[in-house]
Image (cartoon, helix red, strand yellow):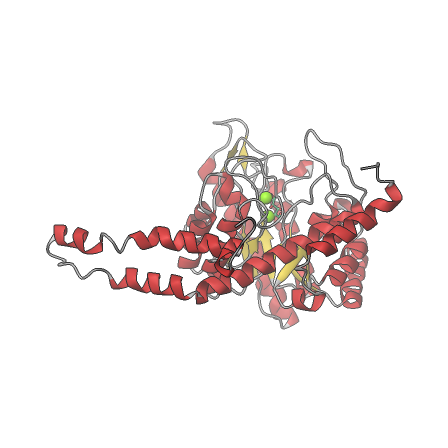
Amino acid sequence: MAPIPVNQQQSLVERLLAACGGAYTPEQRRKYFITGPQWAAAYEGHAVFHAPTRKPVSFETVMEHYAEIGIGHWTTHDTDVIPTDAIGTAKQDEIVGAIGACLKKNGLQCSMVTTETFHHPVWAASAAAEAPEVRAYAASRLANTVNIGHELGASYVVYWPGSLGYQIQGAVEEVQTLGWFADGMNAACEADIATAKKMGRPTMKHCLEAKPFEPQAEILLPTSDAMLAFIFSGLLKHPDMVGLNPEYLHELMWGAAPRAALARALMCKKLFHFDINDGYRLKHDVDIAVGLINPLDWLNVLVLLRSHGYNGPFNLDYKPPRTTSNWGVFAVSFTTAVDRFITLWEMAGEVMEDTIIREASDALRAGGGGDPKDVKSIVEANKELLNLHELIGHRLFQILVGAHKGRVYSV
Ligand code: XLS
Ligand code: MG
Ligand code: MG
């Protein structure tokens, strides 16, 4: 094949994407509670060892493209759009006003806001650092974000406490630090209660997000389970307002089964919000787009969420690859991520209706009729029935690859 000139590359990508088929319309995509982060679309491809591969993108551009694609909700960190120095000033009001107008113009809603408490040097020792002025500043930043959320009509606030941990063991008192972190959450909830009352709005859902590894050597709340323990620790003044924002890859990063982690959140009625992406077990926070690496696991996750009536947001917290261009972020990356999510969601519906899986599950629940007082008889009674576990796995695979509808290539 001859080299493809730059001016023909976009049309080639477009033609092949169209040839893939299976795309949903913006109207169909808008029916799902899919939310698009400012930071995901604006990610420039940089990392500790990586220079950016893309140019900066404004919130106006992000919103315009989300609207075109059919992503109906927008989410943001405070400093994605407001420079740190402008926080709490008249400049902030101006920017928030412009965001509100842009959301309206594009027919989008802001569903979630979150405070950046990990990037700026002020958070070097975390937002729950020893110095009281850091914690007072953190409390004011959290309250400010809550107020921005109310102004923009958001219902969710997320907290990823990035650097709540340490590099040097013994230098930080963990129990005390967790107490200080709880003080910050209490300040945020109280600001929410006051503002909600003033504005005649409901209070927001406060969602804790855990990540096990970076950027500190040790993390104090590394998993969703640790976050649950924190919520129920007695340190929170309003535990009913606080729940979880698990992230798919963050659970895989510590070797967990995301579906089991989500089940524990559902058990506690704390699954408020869900950051969606994909990646590899026990590795970096690569945030690869939804369902591209572990589609079978993703299908299983969505079966769990559908069957438990989860109706919260699915937040596209992934990083378009460094090999994708500024144009490709919207033309290829977000469209295909959303379409894979919808495909898997619809497939999860098929799994729930599948007569084979249903009959197998009912049979397993009926048991083999052994005598509960006789261990040997219990084992014997269930022996052949338990083959259904593997059969269900096979059926899930068939549904995933379309083999249940027949598949013939060379036979
Ligand atoms: C980082 C987190 C971050 C949060 C919001 O790893 O996923 O994007 O979701 O601060
Ligand atoms: Mg996240
Ligand atoms: Mg991540």
